[in-house]
Image (tube, rainbow, N blue to C red; front, side, top):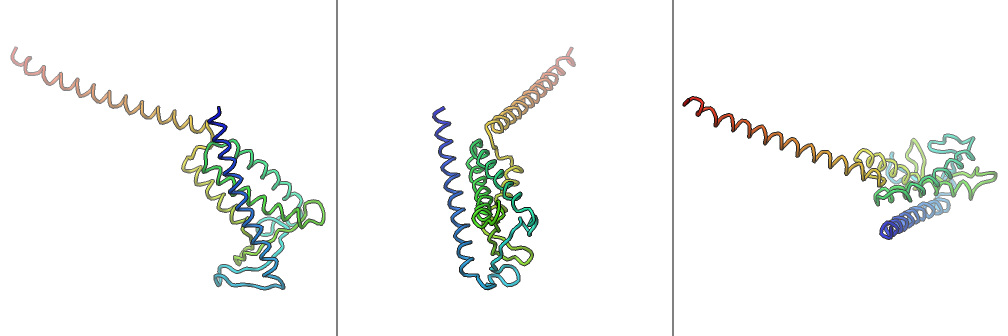
Length: 206
């Protein structure tokens, strides 16, 4: 039990450190954008692909949900709580890091909706990474990266919980047992074939 608690503390510490570092990066870049990109200033980073343009977004991705900002904020709160719960339940350090990135992305934008709110959770998110078809921020980058990694780990079968780990061990044991059984059957078949071959000359002599 003490060993499990120790590993849990380590995962919680890693989650907190990764989330804090990502949140600092998100909030720092947003603060910079609000001072360096005022008056409609546009900074070309990669011509035709990426520029820096300050935009205050009341909605979610691609400006969707701009009329229900408070609802998006409530969903973000639920998502943040769910991510913390999942981070506590997982036994995987890889899952811990990815969940921390997702939490930082969701919480980073939630901070904007609270800090810049005029009414109930209706604040606008600070966006400045202009891709031409959409404008986002560092928190959005963390969310996208986390989403891609989550899909990848699911496809690769990275265990999330002790139950997943036990199921994988059972599958491995079952596969090993099947392989051993197949080898034994093969050896028995070879032995029977050999016995039959040795008996033939004797029968001919009789």
